[in-house]
Image 1 (cartoon, one colour):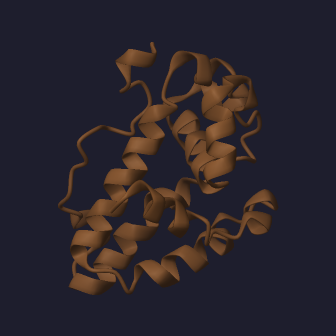
Image 2 (cartoon, rainbow, N blue to C red; image 1 turned 90 degrees about the vertical axis):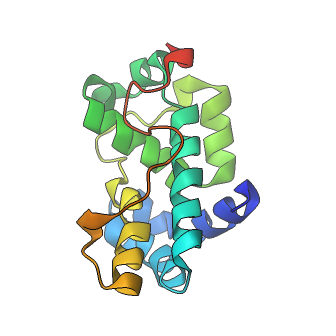
Length: 147
């Protein structure tokens, strides 16, 4: 999946619902498209998601993430929120870490699972059996190049 296709899919996210703190409603339009993707396309979605999260996984971003920067999970979910807000917001934050979300209300953990749930529906497996590993880790602290 090309990066532009990834961002086209992310643009389906209901940003108003996301801003209102309703992750499930926000992600639903994305999920409804992902359920029609092939297994390979879902793996490619995860690869792109991991790449984008990795790009903003640095100490400077964590230091500017307010309450979320103090824990690995919180920082990951804040980075998910940055991606879920779309390409323009992502690029703005990437270019200026002070634009990281500051509140624990600005999380989007659900983004990590939408494609896995679609895969489970496609294959009949449990989403916990997801077999794909991306080339980079999206876990907080993985990008040693950003310190």
